[in-house]
Image (cartoon, rainbow, N blue to C red):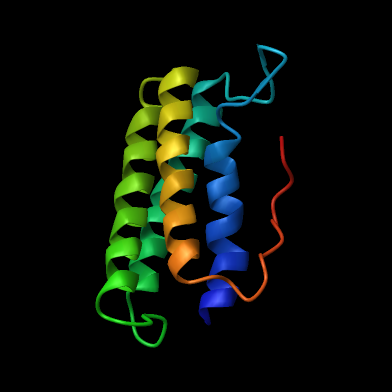
Length: 125
């Protein structure tokens, strides 16, 4: 599986699941988890996203031994933090964790611009 395929099939849809766990429209939570099962789904997405970060560090995906590895390790850490945030079932905590994840993605894409942004494969809530 190439980096592009991994991003399109795994990283993009899973990160969207994490981001969608804390959405407000005009100050009203919209499409956010409300049941234990929904929070578990978000947690599972975050944990799988962390594992995708590990896959990015493996040959032949690893682009170099410095910046790429640091950014992939930061993805793992941010995703694990998001998984832990689901335990609180608190939208503000989840929003902050999603912000860290977003900044982590942006930092990597600033160093390693994707050839094209992968289209999300999971529908937004």
